[in-house]
Amino acid sequence: MPVCYFRTVIYPLGELAGLKNIKRSPSFVPPNEVLENAYRSNSPKLHYKELEALAKKCDLKIRQVERWMRKRNALDKPSTLAKFSESG
Image: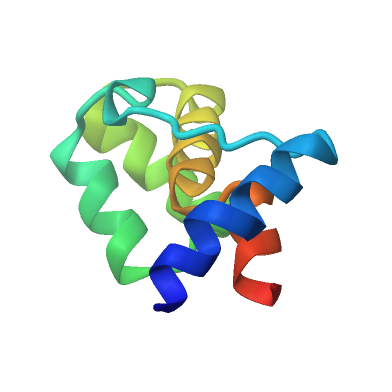
């Protein structure tokens, strides 16, 4: 019953309000095992020394590692429409 309620009432109501259901694909973040393991073991916010170590390990610039972490973090965030439907 709740699934039917969400699909027939809450989602259309959210779409009428202008909320978007954007799902990013995993290809949004290029695959990198070392960075993925670091992301899962730590929080997405790493200290500068940890970023330097990861950058050396992956042969990337620190800025590229920061960008990868931000993009990976964006994959885990729910869309605005999903947040709206959870509160509905």
